Structures are given as structure tokens and as C-alpha cells.
Length: 318
Image (tube, rainbow, N blue to C red; front, top):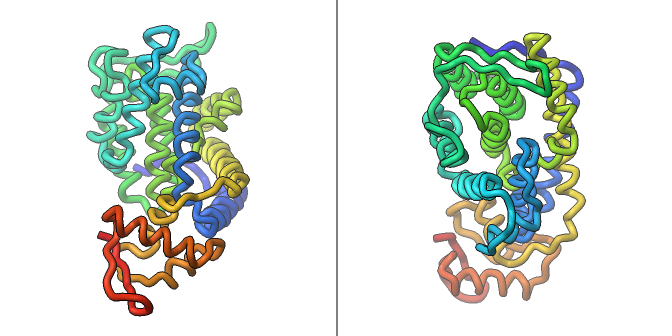
């Protein structure tokens, strides 16, 4: 059964804006951000998603952990971060349309933090905020069929992936399929779904903007619960996505190095044969000598193969 929501004028306008910004990102070759920016954004993503759940580690401490340095912090917080680093490093191994893969990701994310990580709950739960019960989740026996239906919607519905990512996120939080870790898992899986729409979302720190609007995030979750529809949540998350893309477009001055350019170009040409002129067409802001150096470095590194000589030279990715 399709989850309940309406396509409002605000949603249509936000989709148009996001699509326009994706075009700008692609034109600026930021669909795979530079290596430096990817690292920064991955750290911000992990720190923000876990801080929403009460983790105390800072960006600097998480950077130290990534560099295998020792830090002083609560053991649980360190373990949460190490698990999150592990799961985000394996992002490309998960199958976005499979419930089994989601459970596998949860097992990594919550390893040694709860009993039976990766297992759907079979008991009833309520979500408490302060002294109030904010949400009573569906009963344990309903979890598996509800999650199965949600993945059918994700796989088969004709809606745009942008909309489906938001609907999935809300419905996941409503179902609350695990005893713990649902917030960070919902945000993680929306990232995976968005990555199906554009590769830029793999390293876009949407979670840091959710953290900045954390109360609003919880408010729209509650409002959607009361309305029995994810419409306002879709609007909220599309606004977040639009803002995240705007932030990315502000950092176009970060230099893209030769390896970043080569990786971006592979996405453009795939396994087709190409010339230096084709490479220059894709990167209009670089000089002829720079293009030649890029291609020579890639050939020497075994990334591409070269055929012919001088004007007849052709290249192909291995």
C-alpha cells in the first residue's frame, strides 16, 4: 500500500529548485566533490547525525579517530562513532531496495551497543521526549509486514526518488523497526536513496542541516503523525536538501585536483574511447598542458590506457 501524502505546490517548487541546483553541481563538476571536501563532509555527516542522538564527540575528535589517534571521551560515544565510520565507509556495498541490506547496515551501526543489532523488533515500544510519550510505534508483529510494504513502495512506485527518499525516511521513523538506532538509520538510508538520484548525495552532509533545525525536524515528525500523512515532512526535508546543495555550490573555489578530475570524467565517458580534446571540453577552466599532465598521470597510474600517437592519440578507462 502506498504511504499517504500529497504533492503540494511547495513540494513541486522545491523539486524544481533542487533539480536546478543538481544541474549547477554537475556543471561545476561537484557531483563528486573534491577529495578534501568529501572527507570534511563525511566527518560532518557522522558528527551531526550522532549529536542529534546525544553523542558528545566533536568534529576534531572524530577527525582524530579517523587518523587512528587516541582521544579522551566516553567509551560508548567512541564506539558509536567508530561504528558510524565503518558503516559510511561501506555505503556502496548496501542494496538500497533490500530490507535485508538495511538490517545488515543496522548491525554494523549498532554493533556492541544493543542486543541483537540488525534484528527487527518484535516487542512494542513508545518514544518518550522529556516526560511525554511523543510516539507509540506499531506493535512488534506489524514491523516486518510494514517494512516489507515500505520497501515495495521504494522499489516499485513511480514517484521521483527525491520524494520517495523523504517518504521512506518519515515512514521508517513512524514504524520504528529497531529497538534503538532508528534516527541515525533513517537518515543514513535517505542518503542511500538520494545517491540513486545523484552521486553528489553520498558526501553531502544533510545531517548537519538537520542538526541545525533539530527541533523543527522533531516538530514535523510529530505533525505528520497527527495528520496521518508525511506531506509536511517531505516539504521540510526537500528544504534541507535544497539548502545543502546551496552550501555545496558556495565552495566551488575549492580546487579540484587531477585525480578528482579523472574520476569525474570517468562518470562522463564511462568505457568509451576519448581524446585529449574531449577531456578539455569537460574541463573548460584548465589549460592544454594541465590536461596532458592529468592524462599522463592516469596512464602511468594504470587508470587509463593510451593508443596511438600525437594527434591520433586515444584513451580509454581500464
